[in-house]
Length: 120
Image (cartoon, rainbow, N blue to C red; front, side):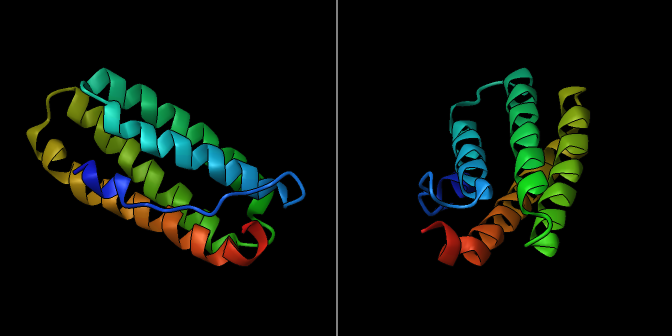
């Protein structure tokens, strides 16, 4: 399931780019960090960092990319809820994680594609 996360590619952002370019890079780094997660508590902690980075991204980009930032927030909210259930031992929630991680990665990738001309 986490292999999907590794497939995510982002454009590099420089300091002369819009603020959401650096926020996008931070989010990418947090998502990439999921590859090293080995427990439910680490997953929860990583998800909190991702949520914080996504919030920063949304704040700086929602005016220019409202659909994409809303999709990121929605997918992360759903994933966060499922992670909490999975951490509590809910087997059905654990089975949902790969699909929800994939949906989150897709929403972030869609944002990356939409901002490519401004962040590359």
